Amino acid sequence: MLVTKTPDQFLDITALVCPMTFVRTKLATERLQPGQTLEVRMNFGEPSRNVPASLREHGYVVAGPQPENPASPEGVQRLLVKKP
Image 1 (tube, one colour):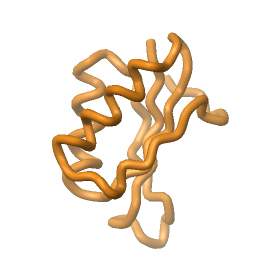
Image 2 (cartoon, rainbow, N blue to C red):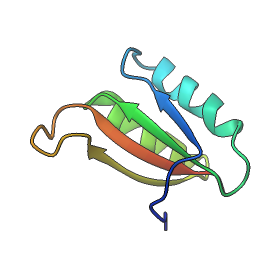
Image 3 (cartoon, one colour):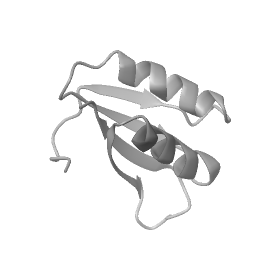
């Protein structure tokens, strides 16, 4: 379970397309120390489906994605990732 706190790192991948969305996110998570969190800002759709699923497959604890703006659920998404 991921406890809500200020993330240790932040990554914005809204300007990227697959597979670079996952590549950039994976590189950022590899730089984390165990127990640290990364907040990822991504577009709705393919990135918000594929990035969390791939991170879970690699053993990371993932919360989200959640819409950045609840009034626009298909807009930019936020994801929290914790390195085990």
